[in-house]
Length: 262
Ligand code: DGL
Image (cartoon, helix red, strand yellow):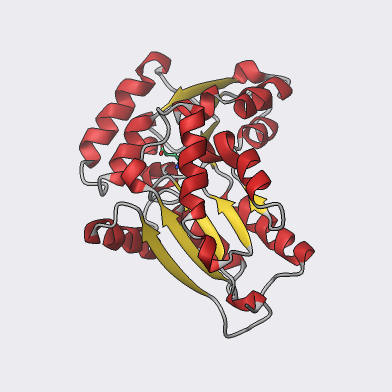
């Protein structure tokens, strides 16, 4: 199969990775992308690491017949639990993961307060804890698990008032919440950035990593010599393990509007 025909597989526990997919396409318009959301098993966040790892490896393996040229784990939780296993399973292609942008947020706000929102799985992971340890002023960082945002997005973002009330309760112990930067450490969260901002009660500066992931994917494809040079190539397919019409149509809706994204 020609390199231009081999897709880049983009994997997430559900719909969140669509926020990364859009940046990947903008950065590499000649590539073909196959997005796979494992909504049947979402949320991953509250699950045990070995279970997240198994679900991720099994989910990606469902696309093996497409002969992917790269795998993008568009999920912070799955990256923390399964990037090593995927690199082991696919030694000949790039495997690119995503991690919360805590380091960048702290560097750009010296002495400031940073709110880091992610899943429980990501926050408890060795990778996240290592990142915090490496940051000189980690006491600046308030880390909070926000599984309610994942459910809100997976449920079609219908109960906006409900999620804002949930976030207000979540942030209440830190009120008045003055944060200089807010890390969106879960790929579902950019879809709810407006709701997060409303619950925090004012404009905030968001940090997320999809641009970095897109640039890194482009670099790794060039390095591997598998980047598509076909100007007429490119395209996107969206698949979902929940296999429900509504899930796919909401995926396309998120893809085309990207409303509320940072
Ligand atoms: N979108 C995922 C992330 O970036 C996790 C959501 C979930 O399934 O809990 O962490």
